[in-house]
Amino acid sequence: MSKPEVKKAVLAYSGGLDTSVIVPWLRENYGCEVICFCANIGQEADELEGLVEKGLASGASKVVVKDLREEFAADFLFPMLQSGAVYEKRYLLGTSIARPLIAKWQVAIAEEEGADAVSHGATGKGNDQVRFELTYKALNPTLTVVAPWREWEIRSREDALAYARKFNVPVTHTEKSIYSRDANLWHLSHEGGILENPANEPEKIMYQMTIDPMDAPDEPEMVEIQFEEGVPKMVNGVALSPASVVAELNMIGARNGIGRIDLVENRLVGMKSRGVYETPGGTLLYAAHRELESLCLDRDTLHFKEQLGVRYAELVYFGKWYHTLREAMQAFITETQSTVSGWVRFKLYKGNVIVMGRYSPNSLYREDFATFGQEDVYDQSDAVGFINLFGLQMKVKAMMEVSGGGRTKYAAPDYNVFKRD
Image (cartoon, rainbow, N blue to C red; front, side, top):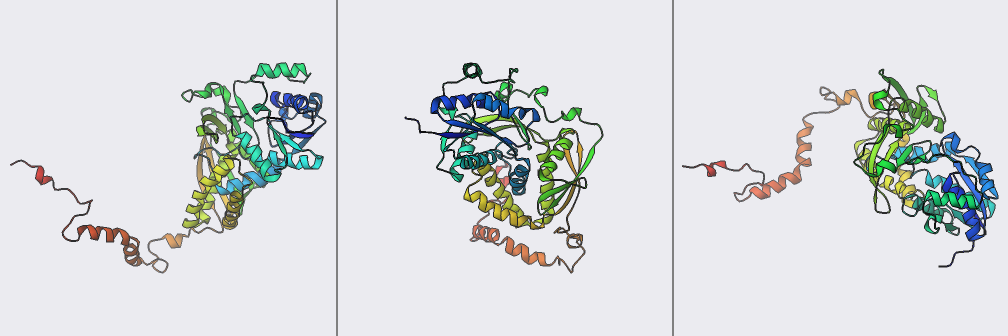
């Protein structure tokens, strides 16, 4: 199949080996100008050092670096937090939620720079290729998409290093970790290495963000998180920006061994994979938000929202952040958050998050309503009629079974028939 004509491409660039060699590869195979784009979404500072110089030395005409940490927290993490979305009951979607933000800015830069293509370094067997490309389609389907991993002959680190040498691409010579990692403001993920066998216990040295719960302090630490309309605003009484809320809770949770999960998950492409995730701040925020909603949302709304959260998590995991369904669901979720204000207090101890109290001025919990002795609020004699109506379908079914001398299927068997004379 012939390659599309590309004049200028915007590459999602990290400065690592793969994206560094993509720069000369695009120029060699497509004859196009390459603009590198790097999003600062809270990865380690050393990952951002020297990116502009490295990108230009690799052959890029321009390198754009944007600090997107506040946008990431305010417009992506917190709306997802409000939804309660958790993929397969445990994964807090740290990698999934970052990709549509990066891809959004790729499209914006492509439009600003007059580029006709976008490119990424995701492999052809993972989830990220879908997340990037669905965002491209949603925001500007006229852009050509180039995914080198689905085209090139490079199949190993050694191949990539040889290609880098051929085109004088500057590559830092460091010992490659046996793990594939992804870091941002929300989490740190680990895949590969000994984790490829789900029977293997993760190595203690693998973890880089959180302390081992067994090595956490012997004294518990208290933390209080305050929300306004479902958005976290303060930590321990101090008002913080969205990104700073996450960063502060990351530090607090990490030093207490909070937020580690080991998960075998179902990838979008059909295969299973094992990942170990460290999400200390996110774990605390999800727990606090859940506690506050238990006070502020009525039963029907809360239960429906829990069902919605499963679908929302799938949409995020599948790369459909900009899908009409996700946006419509968000409108409903935002409406439910109008009363979710207040604070939640936790005791953190060796990996455990223990609720010590929660308060909301909009709480639906009223001690006088719940007290058995207050007949002016709840007349216990009303329960007779309620139970009769609530169980009417069950009663009618049983009456049908016993009509004509029959027995219900739950009637106790007559064990006397088994007795011997």
